[in-house]
Structure formats: structure tokens, C-alpha cells
Image (tube, rainbow, N blue to C red; front, side, top):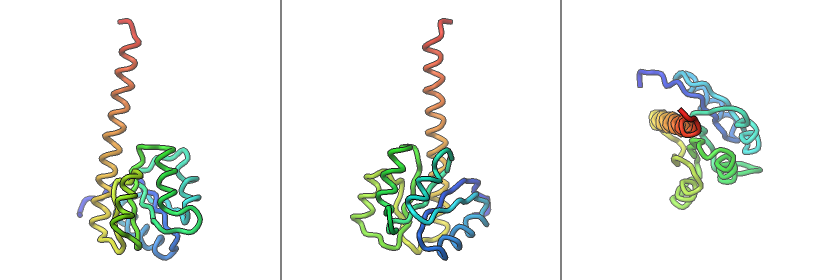
Length: 146
């Protein structure tokens, strides 16, 4: 991938060394990265901020990844959340997708695959934004007596 992917991403993982190394790899590709080491911290970080994608670990102490996913989607159904875990099973993947994750990727993940998923998340987010804007415009047009 020669072109930088301009995206704002929240990476959530309780393994500090992985979090730092993974975030650095994404930053080197032009992304703006914020990190959280717990589900609680992730829930706080999304307040009042827009992220093109959230990369979320499944197994964490405290509020686990699945519960964090559900809470994030309750607060903002448009969030594009990619589960990235070293503890993946088909059942967990299906459960995550049903709970609103856009994808489920197992560690160690190929960085190009992750970049592709972030690109997809950003594209979906733009489409959702455009749809909301169009709906808003249509509502304004309906309420005006021109």
C-alpha cells in the first residue's frame, strides 16, 4: 500500500507492548491513533469524538471486549468496530458480528489486512454520514413552504 490511509482510529487492547507497537505501525502509515487499555477507557474516549474505526481486543480484564462492543454500539450504532483478538473462535466471531462488529480478525494479523479493514470502515462511515446529511436535507425541504 503506497498511499497513506488518512483515518482516525481508536485501538483498545490491555497488552501495553502490543498496543504501542501496533499503534506505531498504524501511525507510520499516516493514521491518527488514540489508544485505550481497557473497555472503560474506550467508552470514555469515544465521548464527543469521531473515529473512522475502532480496533477492539476481545479479552480484557474489567469490561471485556464483547461488553465494550455492545455498549459502544448502544451509544453510537454507526461506529465501525473491528475485533482484533488472539482468542478467536468461530462462535465468538459470529457473536461479535451479531453484536454489531463490522469484522473479526485474529492476531497475529497481517498489517495489510488491517489497513484494508480500516479503509472499509472509513468508507462505511462516510456513506453513513452522507445518508444522514441527505435525510436531514430532505426533512428541511419537507418543512419549508416554498
